[in-house]
Amino acid sequence: MKSDLNQLMNERNLDGFLVLGNSSGNQVLNYLTGGAHLEQAVVFQKRGGPATLIHGGMERDNALRTGLALVERDKVYNPYTFLHKHAGDELAATADYLAQVMADHDLQGRIGVYGTQDAGAAYALLTALQATLSAQGGKSEIVGEYGGETIFMAARATKDDAEITEMHAAGRLTSLVVGETWDFLQGHAVEGETLVTASGEALTIGDVKRFIRERISFYGMTEDHEAIFSLGRDAGVPHNSGNPADALRLGQSIIFDIYPRLASGYYHDMTRTWSLGYASPQVQQAWDECKEIFDRVMAAANIGVPCRELQLMTCAYFEEKGHPVSCVTPGLHDGYVHSLGHGVGLDVHEQPRLSHAQGNKTLLSPGHVVSIEPGLYYPDRGFGVRIEDTIAFTEAGERINLTDFRYDLVIPLS
Image 1 (cartoon, rainbow, N blue to C red):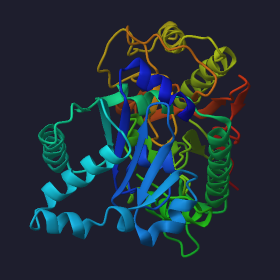
Image 2 (image 1 turned 180 degrees about the vertical axis):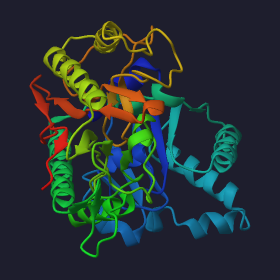
Image 3 (image 1 turned 30 degrees about the vertical axis):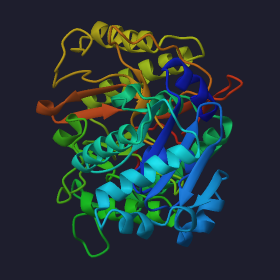
Image 4 (image 1 turned 45 degrees about the vertical axis):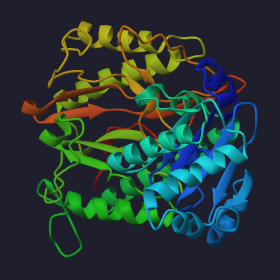
């Protein structure tokens, strides 16, 4: 949670942080600002102090809505002043600007730097900033953290109740889209074994995805990557998104995995497996087994339970049923090939992980928001099955299912 940032800085011997960049695609900046649209922003915080946003004058209203302490860049740190000082050298000017911010706000010591920028540009800027600080006689050290181990990934692994309320709204709207997609499919006629449009042409995955995109947009959400709506053999490869030209045929498994996000940046993630009209015996059996272990895991997923144990429980169940499992054989293409779930938040995949990795010692805790998604995949047999809900644990430890849609496999058709 955001309230953990000072403690995390203390644990990692950081005296403060800088977050740089535009808001677009910048999850750390969006985390601190609530998703406000900003360009060339800086957020800084000294350990034990408040977070402060430096913003452009044209974005002053957006900045005001963040609730952070504010500094208007164009008034206090006008870029043209720094460019003039450095004869138009943009790199030297930006490094000098950031060094001045640090000096003005006593941001000294080990300072972590975060945000989004081209990798080469970031390297050049941080190298120049460190050189500028050293030339000015300071002893500050610019520090980087890597991957999922940063203070922000650790903080974001648990959500406060306000964030969970936001994610509950995302789940409600996503579930509405899924329900409307069910109705859309059910509203089509059948000729032979194929769904057809009013003009008599085969209904395709491309048609369905256009409908899904329209409904996501209608509810004010966006897609970072398009939803998975895959059929038959494609459903047997977990991240195949589906061939737009494929016609919707009866009796084939459809994996519908949808993960839109709100304007604030928070995602929902849910999956349903459907079969139009009827299900083949092998798809029905795989679905029944997925649903059984899904129900068992949902009953077991409570505060204090090791994330790793839930994955091992799932592997043991599927292995007992005769399926290859990833806990025993890494790199599988058939059977249960992935981990049980993952954290959801400002990224659709974040901490914690419900994996069997030996180093995974995470216990389910208040603030965790995780997907539960057992699946079975047999591409050479022409099917795949997955069931997924996203659940949250409030600050008080109450478990909430953020997904609200029935699990039925077969969509009845007239």
